Image 1 (cartoon, rainbow, N blue to C red):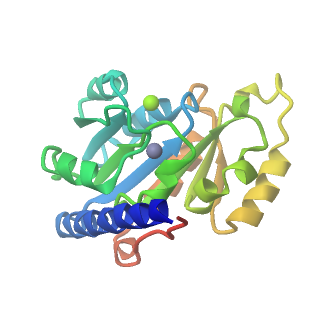
Image 2 (cartoon, rainbow, N blue to C red):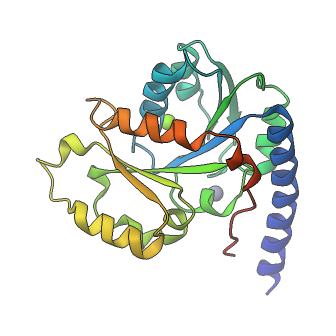
Length: 228
Ligand code: MG
Ligand code: ZN
């Protein structure tokens, strides 16, 4: 019982910080995305391609959550956007307090703030970090059974990017099963099939992202459902 109380307090404190983040983003008119996925699903590559495609139309800033390194952050910095690195020193998710601290450093003179969460399909889903939309990437090599294995993550997804579809021809992966299970877990989520390295489906993702962006969305944000 004691453990549950501690978790509730942690999440309560997290939500207070998430509220502050929402207010800051609203004041600055910044639209923020939280990218979540397993390690190796292609978060950084999808983000790289997305920034390349949109950086002439939008001012973009990027916050990277990583256990120890700044490898992803340096890849993104090469694209000329403002980058802030959060090293979680071993923690397997970003929490709202870490992001709030990062907002003091990152340029908020931007239209779009991209946050790359720590690679993990479990606890990033329980920590609201005040962003407007959750983008969850699932890649073909991970297998077609992940939606029901990690329902909390897929339940909070606004968009699921099914990445590395160029590998479908080599692997035993049932796209229809993924579609079906996503409809069960989260009928509102949009599924887009992409290959970030080959370019397949990326235009559809960019134009969907641009449609997500309009400001009325800023009015509809709220904390995401807590599951603990
Ligand atoms: Mg990465
Ligand atoms: Zn964690």
